[in-house]
Image (cartoon, rainbow, N blue to C red; front, side, top):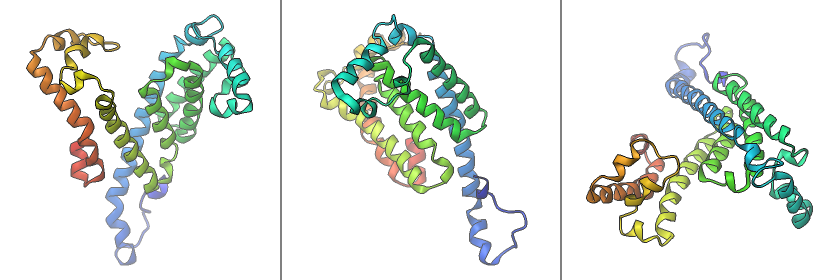
Length: 253
């Protein structure tokens, strides 16, 4: 991405005027990409470390859903298509040591990304390893945030190209992620969302509640109903702003 910088010996004026005019946006793009990829590296690090302390108990040889049994059943049911429908490096070796090694290797690659070293090769490695672990994790890694991290990691590999298509795909990812989060709430038929009472129960049933959840749960019902409306507006209306002008996108963010 160094070619995005303006050469120091570029003659003033003339045909290079448009290049100079574009320089602030170019530098800003570099700054945003570097910040985004480094933060993404930290997110990958948290994911690998968190999974690393659980993986054996979840899908290890003596785990709740042993990976070896899962892959064997998939091979018998799907034949050769199993390798494509369940993409994972653990087809090569599904031992507990391989599961641990994948988490450790992923954490190390995440650190290289977070420190800005071999960023795109590191992101490619993080994506491949986390995809393998998500496939291996079965129901334990079939959550929305796992899919979001995989899609973000995959697209981030191509940020070095500075292609507007990659930026467009990131906007599409954000749009789809947020909009469908709202659509599924209303399409599920859950009366608590239609009746604006969903937050009356959310704070006592959410996974990993914070210490503030108890206080939020005891807020007045009217305030919780208003907050439910805000949630639906954020998820069903605000996502459309990502396709508008920059001020609109900043407001949406």
